[in-house]
Image 1 (cartoon, helix red, strand yellow):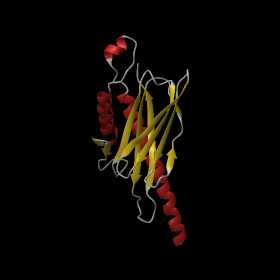
Image 2: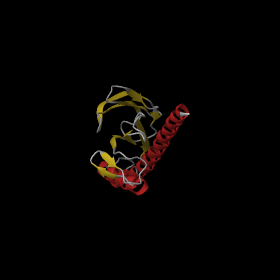
Image 3: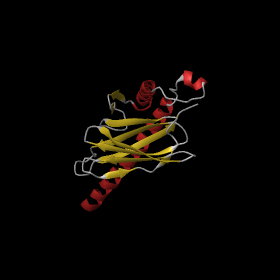
Image 4: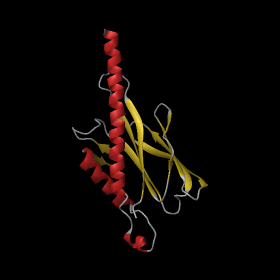
Length: 187
């Protein structure tokens, strides 16, 4: 009986982790969509779509607060009592501008236990239909977590967050995974 209870706790914990991943992904997508409307109006009249990065980050933070109860403190989103996660979400962002979106890009990040840091940004092959974006996060233990590649279809705002949370029972492993959002700037 104790064995089945333990197995049940593992299943519930895994389900909770998947729900958190889905919720955080949705929050990032919604906030990033809102951020990509922060385009430079003067350049836009000349046919150039370019992001005002400070304004984009402010818009992103506003939407994370409205939808998930998170407030931004430098490179962390701190959850409210009713947020989907209980621990702060370290995040980083990267803007792929109108000159570079057709080029492949490898974004390598490192999670050091408290922050998500850009370790390396490597441009690659030019593709007429849009570059391929590959995001890799290296954990504290040196494990490489590679997200599914994305194809950019225009200038893009990339946001990556890392969920690193305690499980609901101390005997279970923590929930640790990266989540990314790539949004084209809105014309």
